[in-house]
Amino acid sequence: MPLRVVCLPIAPSGIEISCLLSVVENAEKLIAPSGIYSSFRQLLAELLFTFVTLSQYTSMRLQLQLTPNTQPVPFTYLYNLVGSFHKWLGKSNSLHDGMSMYSFGRLAGGEKIGNNLYFPQGSSWSISFQDSDQAWALVKGILKDANMAFGMRVEQALEIPTPTFGECVRLATDGEILVRTKRPDGSRQYLLWSDLEADNLMTQLMRKKLLTAGYDETHQAITIRFDREYSKARTRLMDVKGIKHRGSVCPVIVEGTPEAICFAWLVGVGELTGSGFGALV
Image 1 (spheres, rainbow, N blue to C red):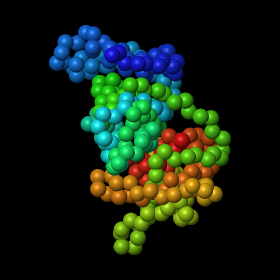
Image 2 (cartoon, rainbow, N blue to C red):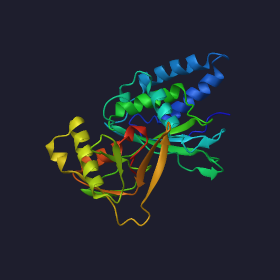
Image 3 (cartoon, one colour):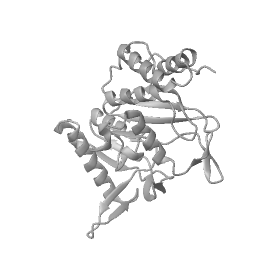
Image 4 (cartoon, helix red, strand yellow):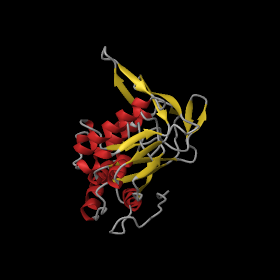
């Protein structure tokens, strides 16, 4: 069955990412002989990106729409998201090292059945980049291979418009916010939403990221703090390759220039934002 596509005019060229996915999906079914789908998909993806006019934005948030899973999804699926992310960017991508100027959230719409999650209606997954070139590199990888994990595959990829921010916003989290400090013996201590020092560490890390990304001193006034008036604030333990991280599920209040706040919205707060922690919505 041809891929279902919803086309929204989000790019200056009028070509929406999902339309590209549809072109690749349907063309390879109609034209490519059996046994060479992978090579055909790669070639067609390269040709399409030669002619597509990219977004006018220098940063980008994508929302991937995924098909229902055909295999059980374990609660430890975060490592699989990281694997798919880097597969689409390519093995030689530069995001493996250095400070993460991107973030991604969790799979939405899951139902807990026994010891696993199921997504009978499919799922959505948000991924944000401070550099839109990296976002388009990800889309190019998806065009070559739309498979994600657990039998799920990308059927739509939508560009989410960047909100207009003021100088103080409250942002919810799409996954746990991870904050750690070093003990005198060198071990790491997890700081939670109730710890005031967590605010300082989140703020200092964000200021460092802003400087690394080339933002000037004007944006160094940014501050981040947990919203401790939120009645449903809690902590959650997340297992990543056998390492258990305890993070906070609590909104944050971000104050600063609109540009700095937008940057935080894209790259996430706290540590390990490149591994699925600290994404903001």
